[in-house]
Amino acid sequence: MKQYPYWWDSLPAVRPDTKELEPRRQHSLSAGLPARADVAIVGAGYTGLAAARQLARGGASVVVLEAERVGWGASSRNGGQVLTGMKLEPAALVARFGEARARDLFDASIESIVTLERIIADEAMQCEYERPGHLVAASKPSHFEAFREEQSLLARVFNHAVDLVPAADQLAELGSNAYHGLMVDARSGALNPALYVNQLAGAAMRAGASIVEETPVRSVSRATGAVWTIETSRGTVQAGELLVATNGYASAATPWLQRRFVPIGSYIIATAPLTEQLIATLIPKRRMVFDSKHFLHYFRLTSDRRLLFGGRAVFAKPTADTTARCAAILRRDMVAVFPSLSASRVDYGWSGNVAFTRDQMPRAGRLHGAFYAGGYCGHGIAMATYLGTLVARRMAGELADHPLFDDHFRAIPFYYGTPWFLPLAGAYYALLDWLH
Image (cartoon, rainbow, N blue to C red):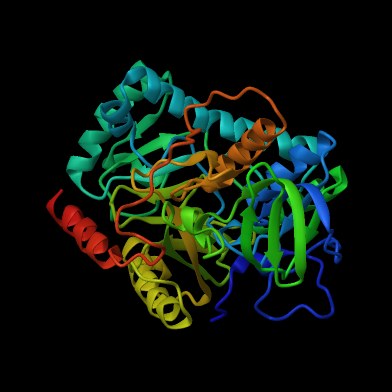
């Protein structure tokens, strides 16, 4: 089993010096570290690259500093699901924020997909984008009854239509008897995340941004009223504005951001290519799928007939050992959902960090003088692209009033970057899944 993302092997161009476990890329990146820039961006994932593209198109000089390679983190490790809505379910949004603000937040999720689709079209990206929709699979009969309430709420408050498929009819959508009915949302999409992030980097560079890889940022500082000084492994950059776009990979260089984003390991396996006959029985309409548990599973088919199957198999920091252990757990769970895959080989198993906030809502804004965006809670492909673009427009001087902008984003009490509480959270969610 290869312990790196399946998506990395889908990139067609390979540099001669590419190492086995590094993402391949399709373009040449700027090797020089500029002494000055109008804007410095830390992190070459969706957020940072979307912001760099937007700012450079407006005429700013932009340098993107990346500790590893473009898209090395969650931007090339995720499942490629482009989903409507937030991590919080619609009823939770209404309960917490009221109907008007909840509607604004849900609308932002739809607008994020529109923004993603517009960029893909404008840049003529070939990243396997499609709009098959998604399924939510009811893990218990009571969950399907909750789907009925959610369908009504989505129509009444959010003007968003979904369909319900009872268990007796679900084989037309999902070839499994492990669930108790489905909710179908036709608006969601899918893509190849590694192709997308590489082509987003290319778009940023065509706009005029510089991307400097393998250059960890060691510290950032700014005297009152002065420019930012960014100390890196390769020298110093000075910039008028700073955007920190590290999300689940925030480092000690920005401890204030570490205290707000909690990195949680997410794990995925990918099977060997399956036969067309078998594929047709698994997810006949090739939708994105996730279940209704707190310790959820998510899965999809790839263009070359593999099944990707992922989830929070354990609440632990991703390492080679935890990745191997979680791959075994996920394979067991995959076969429980699809017994027909019991003899199928697993070719890939990998992991990465998803960034959660305390209230499970993404954020963007300005803190300690620097701009930031992140905390996508597993809904990052479209939302990171969207918030990266929006925060760049704000940095360029546009007036900004958005429900996800937060210049008073509070730190998590007693948390300083090491998520000591994750085992407790894992036990809590496992208990919720058992009780409800």
